[in-house]
Image (tube, rainbow, N blue to C red; front, side):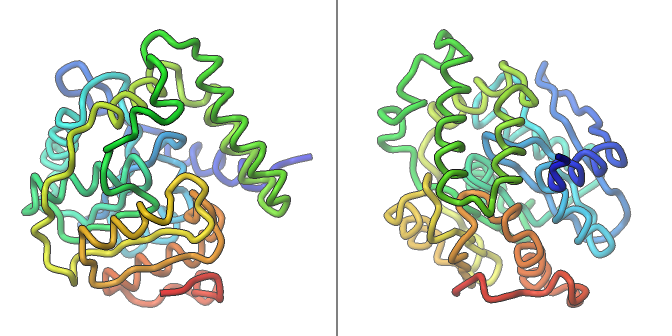
Length: 284
């Protein structure tokens, strides 16, 4: 049986194949809708490539220039943030809204702290406020350079399978994510994503004013604890904070229409078509 979510993602990927951006030996994948409009930089978490945001890219591209990235296979957090600034320079983008989810949300916060002049609006989504204690938690407690890749992949797979068993309505989403961790994300890239967060420094203060900060999280996120959710809101003091009642760690896939609509609303864009409009799945 065809998985409609994977089919939609694959069709999008054929229409928007990744380009490459290289800096200091690190190679990023890039999807850039181009155009002269305001820019939105989208940074995925550990289990996504640039096209994991396919629903948001398609929904927002008529109104924004969307640049989504896939992480490279080496480097540290500071290297990656410098790479993203260089990517914006190479694409002629002076200032962008930056949305990051999970690992990407930590990166987005770091970018806003280190390069606030490049961040028009910060979206910190399903992410963490600190890396304190992270190295003691699986899979970060493993030696990420020598642990068998099968064990790392199996750790993710076990969690996703358990989530799918508890949420049968999200079977298509779980299948897509299992394919990502099962090999669509190459081994060096997966190890690098884990290592960057494990070795990351604590975040710098965010100097953006509240009206230029949005926090997104989910009440049923199995990876971001209530303390971490509260910690992100406390350290950023956002002008708006959205909590999905359901959506887990991936509301941009599980609640794609609402997620896209709230981005548009926070950036002051014209309302999206009715099919993309918000529903009852959220609480402010």
